[in-house]
Image (cartoon, rainbow, N blue to C red; front, side, top):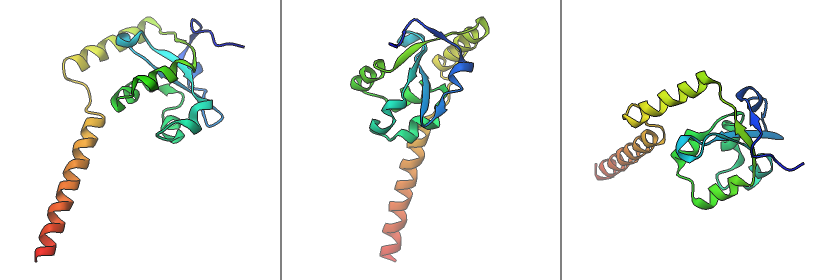
Amino acid sequence: MAPDPEREITMAEVEKHNKTDDCWLVIGNDDTGGPKVYDVTTYLDDHPGGGEVMLDVGGQDADEFFEDIGHSNDAREELKKHIVGVLKLSPEEIEKRRLKAEKSAAGGGGGGMGVIAVVVAVAAAGYYYYKKNVEQA
């Protein structure tokens, strides 16, 4: 059966699909056409970052994770091949997403991958500094 991109799927349904042999993700926001549900099960072995990264967010809203990584246009095109429907949102969920988007726009969002990158850079600089000073001593 061909996927129905207009099929409405609840988050409760998405949460059931979080295993190696059945992995769905929610990706999308108001800026990208709304949250959509993708069955990435057949793509796990082909994912350049490894299937494990997708399994870590399987059955969940992975939009922030997907956007923080900075995926290419090719990745976005590949994603379109795996759509199974759109995420059905209750009025409460819509309001929650709206407030989260406002908070992020106001600079109140979490640092996410940016914070991790800074920590890694500082650790690398510290290691370099330590090695340089130990070798001179």
